[in-house]
Image 1 (cartoon, rainbow, N blue to C red):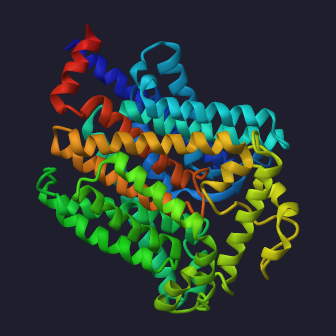
Image 2: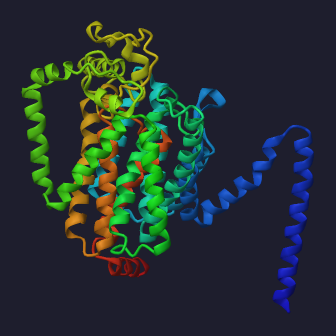
Image 3: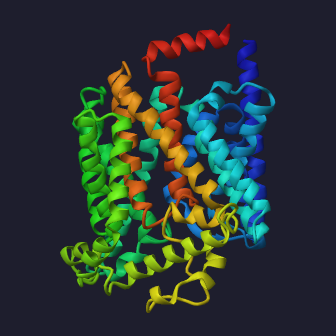
Length: 491
């Protein structure tokens, strides 16, 4: 009887509060204060942040592909809405909940991947203070910081539960598929013109490069899930859904008309042979070093061979594909060379500290080499990134910035290879291989583009690092190991 009275009182207060909000909201809307309507959403998000952080981060992952890009809000600060305000709030909540009250699993900080990330993050902060544009660099660091906190440090803890890894990936894939269908519909109205493909995915993705990079990331992952569906105990419904999802992803990639993304998937598929033939990590590093050495020794011959290709980027998939290696008269390829040369010239001027994180778009103009200028080169230097995930940090944070970034990748792949070859649970092996192959697509794409500072890719990049770390800490010896660890924490 007492419980019935309590529940009746609670229900009554729920109705009273709801009625008051509806009245206040109606008056606010009538007066033009539309923002009042988002208060309940903020309230729910805060409650989730306090009591169910796992649900909140998964909700944010779902929001990322659907968020609107390139919005300038207060003070000229560019934000993607609605996901980035949630990310910022969650970052603060995570620091308070896990760091200050001491409940975070500090074994994460001892992992080599984490150490490499912290070194890189510390260097980005340090070079923000030595930057030629300190405000810009500090904004860049702040953005990098909240991505790392939420999508790496929080995600590692989230992935203690193995099922959350799959949820994390699918909660990005599902809305991404929706965006692809939306884009393909718009594209059909333009007769799938290559010219229309560059920005037709707006407002969800700002351009075809970042859009295709996200799609390419998931193609080897979903493909591997389908191939090993029965080994990872994928239920029949999800298996049936995965096949049309893969088809939609492939169609989205094809009609993005992004040559780098096409090539990145091919590189990833070729990389999978390394796992098939069980090539060891040390052998892979030796192979890569040999390839780089041979390329440097024969660079003049390589450049000459590439210069023979005169196929311009054009309407038609075959011609577009053939133009990938055209450094003769393809303006897009030539402009990338121009940006790379500018980044290298910047690194020669400031080899240790660089010009400062986020400053490349504001500084590269005067470091362009006239010999590499193209029809689309601007002397105002207002065209953005260095078009490289490797040369951009070199120009902005010097050699230490580049090497600390490469160290993260080194430990991610070293750990991932150990998981693929030594993990007891087949699911751990398959998920580790899937993540490494997904990362290969982005790292290959990163040779000619760079999107790690955007939320659309940050959630995938840092989340992938978190998955590999979590698999290594909590799951490499199977699910029984996680149970033992939880008992140890309780003791």
